[in-house]
Image (cartoon, rainbow, N blue to C red; front, side):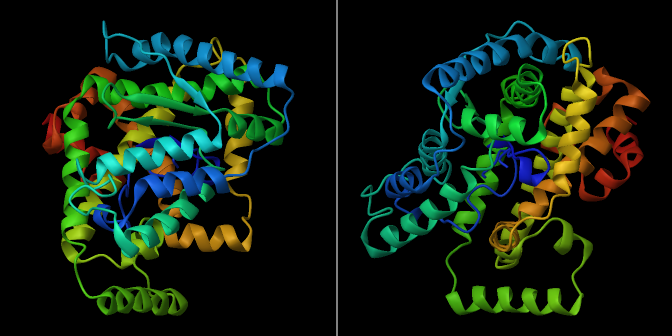
Length: 372
C-alpha cells in the first residue's frame, strides 16, 4: 500500500502500510485475526477535527472531485496509463481507513491467512493477541495517513482520509482547495503507477510472502536482535541503512527478511519519490499555491514529535518513510532532468529495472546500467 503521511514526509501516506514499504512487517498473517484488528482499530481511532455536517459533506465531495480532476494532470506529466479507466476514489474517516487497511493486510499476508478461522489462520489466543496488537498500531496510524492507494483489492482502491486532510490543511493554514488537489495528485500517481505496471502488485506480494514464511523462529532470537539494535543505537554505532531506513521492527528480521525489506524499501522509495516529483511538476497553473504548500509541508516534516510518537516511529520504522520521500524524489528529479520522463519510464519495465540501493544515491549508475 502506498500512502501520504504528514509525519513521515508526506504521507503514508501511509505513511501505515504502505504501498510501498514494510507491509506485513512484524505481523505474520497466521498470527493475526485481521477482522478483530480492524474492529479494534476502528474503535480506537480518534474522530479527528470537529466539522459540521455541512462542512463534512463538502469536504468529502471536494476530495472526490479533486481525485478525478488530478488524473489527467498526472497522466500528462508521467506519460503513463493513457486510455485506462479512472475509477472513483473512496473518501473515508479514520475508522473507515483502519477497516480497509487491516482488511488489505489480511489479503496481502495470504489468500486465507487474513481470515480468522480459515485453516486455523488468525484463530486462537495467538491470533486474538496479534489482532489486538495490530489494531492498536493501525489506530495510531489512522491519525497520520492522508491518502493511500491499495493495489491488493480487486480493482485497486484509492482511499482519501478526510479528517486527516482537514486537520493538516488547518494546521498549515493553506488554501483548502489547493491542498486537497495537491494531496490527490500524490495519491493518484500511485494508482497510475500500479495500473500501468501490473507486475508491481505481484512483486510486492512475493516480498511480503517471504517476510511471512521466514517469520517462524524462536522469540528469543527476535528479541536478541532487537536488544542488539538498541545497544548499537545508544552507542551511535548504527549503519546509515539502520539509521535512515530500518526501524527496530526491521532489526528483528532474519537475513532473508531483511533482503525482502530492502526490496520493499527500494520500491517504496521509488514510488513515493515519483509521486512527490509529479505533485510538484504539475505546477502553479493547476495548484496556484503549490510553492507555499510545499514549503509549509516540508517545515512540518521537521516538527518535533511527542515522546509517544518518537517511540512509535522507532518501532515502526516511520523515519524510513521520511527518507523515502527525500531520497526518492532526488533520484527521480535527477534522472528526469538528465534523460527525460519517457526514458525514466523504463524503470516500470520489471523488477530488473528498479533502482538498486546504491543507485538511489547515485542516479547516474542506474542510467548507465538500465539505459546504457
